[in-house]
Image (tube, rainbow, N blue to C red):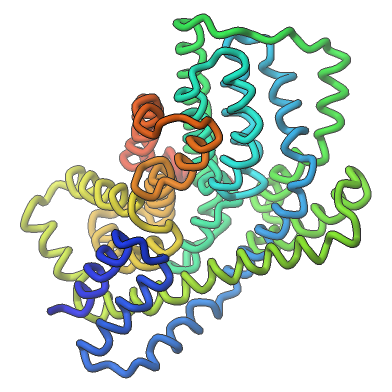
Length: 424
């Protein structure tokens, strides 16, 4: 059997059995190496080369910055969103979407966004009479903006795997991320009007100004990151380091929600998250090497060409593959493993690697709300204490909006490429 196919099939079997993704990949890789007669030292070599990358330095920095700013920032973001949209019918639903988008621009994590924002807004929506399945579905799918809106760990990993500009990838993801947020907010407004959801009292102008001023330091962080990259002041990796320094100064001296005594705890938590992520990436790099050297990408390319010569259909099939993989597999591992598999096909149909990076990230983000894995969906459903099948039914129209944004990202190149071009 083809060694690359052994890796893919082994990964699927072990994942279905509930084996953690790093171990599923590791065992599948060793199995394929032995079947092909390769020395097992290849695993160690490839794991080291995967992590020996300057662009990947952005990952621990952004994770650390997000943890440093996680103290009182959630409530400040919610207060700001409520001051802006509180008087709208269905305001708490709109606040959930807006706050998730803002928190995503700081944390870069879907699961963290679902926990932080959903943990507050889901009980709030239930108290105001929102159906619990709707509340869980909305908070869950809003959290999928975490790995899409910069700083996105998915895009950093993809940039390292393809040697693409992480700065360009960040800028390319801005418009799809904002359009997804607007689409979800629009759906909430329509749904709220149809079901007569309540509106909150309008926040007085003076109080709104006070809230905005209080939150300004937190909300400036994504502006600092994207603005610095857009203006060419620093690279994405340098922006990550700057964000840590900024988060440290704001948390210690402005908001004062982080004590010197707690800094080591935050650093330790960030180190554990980073090391587990890089371990998965290292094993994924070894498995992707086997997949590439086995000739599996050429076999897949030939298979697609035999099915159709239409680039429209090929892109649809690629999206379907990525969507299914997102249901089953951790996103960063999927990027490292599938990128070398699909990149020859993507280049042949003339798609920019920058555009494809956003397409891949968006697909894997939507996988966060689709079983059997669906990390964001599981967290939102658990907070709402709702039956999973009811939440799944409620999330389908919102998932449809996400797929619509995905199709725009796939078939309209300027949807992603206009902003990076404008920054040059």
